[in-house]
Length: 238
Image 1 (cartoon, rainbow, N blue to C red):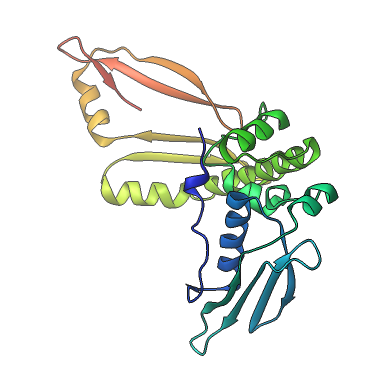
Image 2: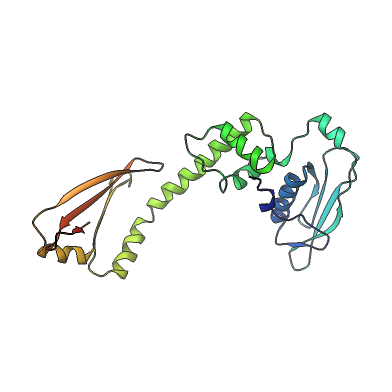
């Protein structure tokens, strides 16, 4: 299913952007939608000029920084007469740029270790009618996995704050966070609500523990402790 309609709208004369980077993203999406290839002709703190990659083509976009600090498109010439020249020169499109691929790909394809570069190629071809080579797809996979791994590791550093919030919202809850004293690496976390601890006094003297492997970047196991209450129903303890 095509996702071209999900790309940012094409710029127009008088349109404002918060920064040159936002304009760049709009131009990249426009490049993919309209199948044009551009390059930066001039770029400084106050002005940006973007032209077609084939020399002599009239296609041109210019944007200037206003007194308020935002960016406004002042020139937009979209006609060009170099389709054959561009094709013959095999000019690379925006879809070959890692920045665009790494931003556009995650909403359409979950990247895991089992994802192949071919999967990425197929996704971009089916969703955006774009062709990228194998090595470009491979680099995109490696970069996205690296970003995901850093974010996953960062989430463990938030466990202490999570437990503090849990205690504030659920007074009496029993928690324990265990980390490696040498490298502060996460080892285990324990949570037992006060209601479960109080209810256990009126339950059968029986506890069953079962576990399941979690899917994610690291190998982890979720363990649940369950007992049976006076009515014969299962009661989650921790």
